[in-house]
Image (cartoon, rainbow, N blue to C red; front, side, top):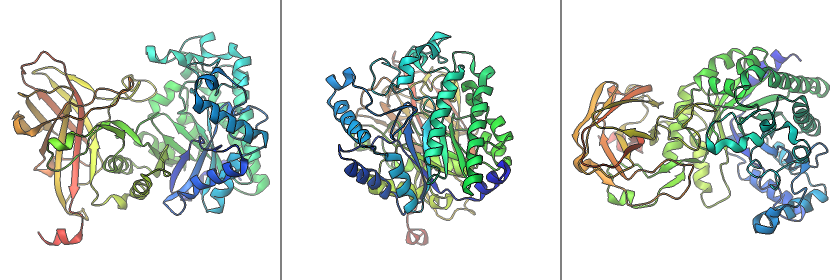
Length: 549
C-alpha cells in the first residue's frame, strides 16, 4: 500500500474525539493484576462517549513497558525517594510491576480495542520533566547519564532566551546521529511490540519543543524530517506484512512559524505525505486562537486531518454571569477550565476548519467526572454547541507564552497607559446571524479585567470600529474579593471587572474581531494591567423560553 493510499484512508476515518492518557496511572499497585485493573478502569471511564481514539503515553527515556532500549520506570533509586514519599511509593510500585514484566501499554491497547476504540501509543520526543535536576531525577534515563556529551549545552545553549528556560540546555541535542538513532530505536521498539493492537503511533513534539541549540533548528530541521520518513517507512512495511493500515499522528507547536523555530518541517512532511493527523497544541493551557487554518489547507491537500489540542487548564478565571454582583467575584479564582470556555475554544477551532478535538490531561475519575462527560459531548461536533452558553476569550500568557518562539506571543497581560489606544484581536467562532441560529440569544456581553482596583475608571472600548462603551465605568465595575493561588508561571489575576452588554450583535464577526481600548486619566500611581478580555453569549435554554417571547 502506498503512502498516498494510506493518507486517503485516513481522511475517511472517523477518529472521533481523541483522548490522551499521560500514563501516570499505569502502576497503581505493587501487584500487576491490580495495576491492570487500574489501567482498564481509566479506559472504561471514557467508553461509550464521543472519544473514539486513545493515545496512551509510553514515556520518553523511562517507559511503561518492558523495554530493552530504554529503561523502565523506577529503574534506579535516587535521593528523590529519600526526601519525597510520593516518589518512593510511585517508584516502588513501578519496580515491582517491571520485575513481573507488567506491560501497561499492552493492557491499555488491548482494552481500547475491546471497546472498539482506535489505539495509538504516544511517544514524547524530548520530555523535559527530568531536566531541572538530571543527575538525580527519577525520570532521567541511562542513555542521558552515559552520554552527557550529547546535550544541548555541550554545543550551544537553550533556544529559549528566558532565564526560566536555562534548564532546557540539559535536553538531548538531535544534531547528533546517536541521539536520533536512540530515539528511533525506541520508536521502532514500540511499533514492533504493539503492531498487533495499535492503529498507529503518535510522536509528541510538544513535550517539549526543544531539539537543537539556539539558532540551529531551522537549518537542521531536515534531520528530524529524515527521522519521520524512517518511521513512516517502518509503518508502511508492517502494514504490507500485516495487511492493515498504520497511521502516524504528530502533536506539534501552535503555528507553522513555531514549528520552523523548533526544527519541524511540517510543510515538507505534508508534501511527502508522512503524517495522517496533526495536532497543533500548547504546552499546558487551552488557548482560543491557535491559527489552525495555517495547517488545515496544506494538511487537507495532503489528505491529513488536523485536530485542535484542548487542556483542562487556563489562566485565573471567575464565573461569567449575565448580571454579576459582588458575590460573583467573592469566590477564589481557579485555573480549571469552565464549560463555557472549552465550548468557546471548540467553536473557534471548528470555525477554523478543525477535523476534531484532542483532549490532553482531562480527568474522568474524580468528582467532576459527570462534568467531564458533558464537555466531551460538547466538543464532539459543531452541532453540539448550538444554543450553548460560551465564554470567548483572548488567551492569557502562561509560563513563556510572552515570548514569540515555541508558540505565538499572547496579547495579554497588557499594561495600559492613559490616553493611549491599544488594539487587540479576538477570535469568535459564533455565528450571530439570527437567520442561521437554531437558538435564541438572550444575552451578549463584554467583560474586561484589570489587575488593579480603579474606582474612577474612564475608558473607551470599540469593537470593529464601533463604540460599545464610553465614559466612567461607575456601576459597571465590580471589585474582586476572591484570590488566586500562588504560582510564578501565571500572570496576575484581575482585581476588578468591567462588564456591559453588546446591544448591536450585528457589529460582531464570526471570526476575527478588532477590539480597541483607550483608558482616560486616572487618580492612581499604580500600574494598570489588562488581565482579561471576554465575550460571553447566553441563550434561552429550552424551546418554551424561545416560544414565550
